[in-house]
Length: 288
Image 1 (cartoon, rainbow, N blue to C red):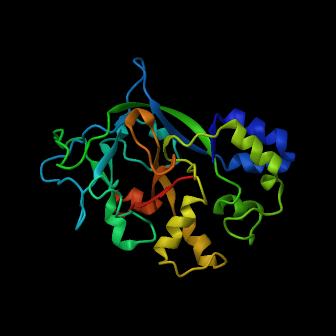
Image 2 (cartoon, rainbow, N blue to C red):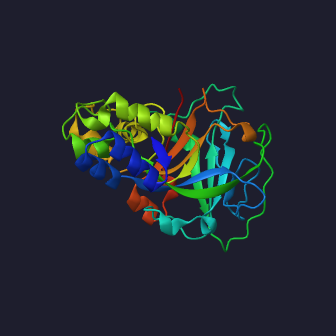
């Protein structure tokens, strides 16, 4: 929901929340790598757009029956400050993100978390550092997004009060995904959080900047096949099994617009991340 320095977010909580609650809320902050367009002096950690480097024997990702996916971003794991995160990312190699963005069919086929048949429309690949990987030409019919080099900064992130983790901490049993009667849900505190930071942006790890309901709930609904209602404990439990791997917001410099100033999100279970099973990452997108 919000990102910034640990000191600034703790001060914000202390200003708007009772002392004990402010401290407990601050303990739930999570570190993330925020990504922004780099300047000449920045250390590069990856890029939006451009063309990916895939090793021999690895095909360009395709959604069967629809066509090749567009290349969204490349992240150099060795350049990331992974030691600062609470996410078990690889310390080397490159993460590549692909998404079927509608270029080939004028947006007719949508990649939706709730549509299992569309899951192949968003993929993550990890290319090991010792695999020679040439830069590939973009498949016919697709326009490569303009290359935007990225720099990184570690910041703390705060989840929205109706996020399952925050809800479970302050109001166990409260309706999932809804405001509840507690100081962390007061309009004063919510307004202060939004005024502190209202950007979605690009990010690795941490708390997702969801534009609508928490993305973890969307993924949990999809994994459970839409069979669990919002008051079903299984939905809350499943939502707690997923963490943000990466999010990429709309970006003018890369000519990327996801719906109405939306964002793309990839989430993964920690056990799958530890096993480097990036094929098990789940995707969703949101816009305003």
